[in-house]
Image 1 (tube, rainbow, N blue to C red):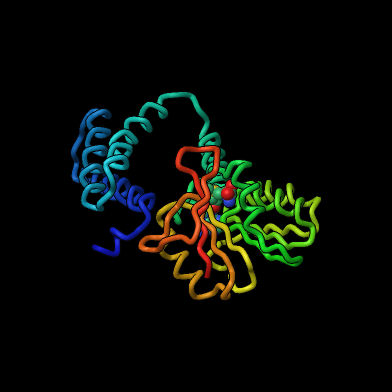
Image 2: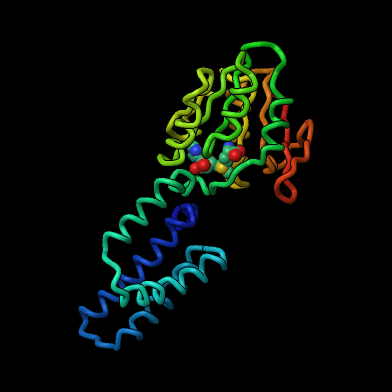
Length: 249
Ligand SMILES: C[S@@+](CC[C@H](N)C(=O)[O-])C[C@H]1O[C@@H](n2cnc3c(N)ncnc32)[C@H](O)[C@@H]1O
């Protein structure tokens, strides 16, 4: 049970809807007959109950209750099935990479890019990586300003990766990789930068402690490492409370 509760919310939500649907199928098999709206209501009630049992937050429980009604409403519209497939694929290509790690796609401001520049080592050959590089804003900016350095971005969502990769084509010192940030060996970098979410921060810190070399620098955009005090905190313009938290390894 605790294993189920440790699954990412999106998987728990899907599981709750699937179990609720399975229960309805069992009721149909038993010969029960209700008007369509009653089935929709039953699906919503069961999904809410199971979502609470799976420890989903109130926001998720609300969405779980609304989903069956939304599906029913869309069902009656003349939308071809391929539109849903296309929408699903589009969303997966743009947001899929961060779904399981619970990291959404949003971007650091240009002010943050400029402040990152000031946190690079002064000597030539500095190596920088952006873990979850989005559309590649920080990497392209730094690669342009510091042709003497090497700038790497790693991105898990295919479409987002493609945009970053295309954007970096003019810079020979910028490289965008498609894949998981958890597979990147951090030992070869002087500066590791990440703008993620509170969820992966403990695991990222553990990885940084294991792999990063002494004298290197971990920079987290806005998200704290629990129980660790950053060596510097640099406010950045763009969104409320945005800041760069700098940890010296
Ligand atoms: C908040 S955006 C940050 C974008 C960029 N680094 C910036 O500062 O503007 C986080 C990005 O991390 C990506 N991401 C989430 N989990 C990832 C993972 N496990 N491996 C690689 N990228 C991931 C998301 O797809 C998203 O594009």
